[in-house]
Image 1: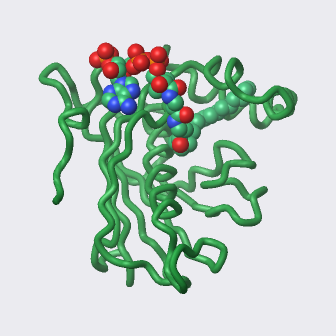
Image 2 (image 1 turned 90 degrees about the vertical axis):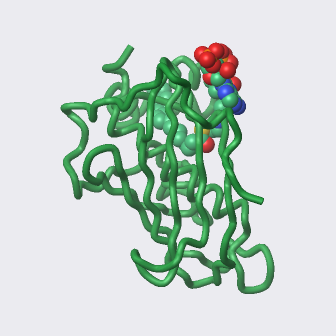
Length: 194
Ligand SMILES: CCCCCCCC/C=C\CCCCCCCC(=O)SCCNC(=O)CCNC(=O)[C@H](O)C(C)(C)COP(=O)(O)OP(=O)(O)OC[C@H]1O[C@@H](n2cnc3c(N)ncnc32)[C@H](O)[C@@H]1OP(=O)(O)O
């Protein structure tokens, strides 16, 4: 069975948003939004170390190399790890709107097994925005950027304010992040949209 549930179908009043004028230029590496992020941080030894790049329009691309620590079945990537790669790539679309948004819903199709050692070539795109809701979609291909689609997802991200993290995160990490000028600069870069 495949298909998208109605919660991921943009409502009639949804619009295709503008790319933010100060969004990173096409081809630019986006960098990690948080060094300890399991998806994109360089401070997580077993993390995905996913590197995303701005694309044209409302698109980003990213690559993730599947390592032994990412296995589910012998020699194959764990499905949850692949979902994380899709989630992280979709999350990096935030940079194009310069808005902070978190995943509300993520629906994933697993179409092909992904062996350890594979490079997953990811692409994500914003389809529409309705108020705080951002509708987006992503694919992950193996065997090259034009290879077959191994995984895909549709998602709904919800815009939040930076207080979402300050109010809900564990105080150790939040205090460390707030005392890191680089982290504060990155968080502020998203706050231009109320
Ligand atoms: C200096 C300080 C340092 C801070 C630095 C931070 C920088 C960070 C930068 C960038 C971060 C990017 C991180 C990317 C990482 C990858 C992405 C992830 O994995 S994120 C983690 C997983 N996700 C969650 O943990 C969300 C947990 N959920 C929630 O917190 C809430 O449920 C939340 C915020 C999503 C919504 O709660 P509400 O109370 O704000 O809003 P309501 O009214 O419930 O929803 C708004 C609209 O959205 C719909 N909605 C919400 N959830 C939905 C769902 N699951 N399915 C369908 N619709 C949903 C609702 O029906 C409503 O729609 P209607 O406006 O009425 O039309």
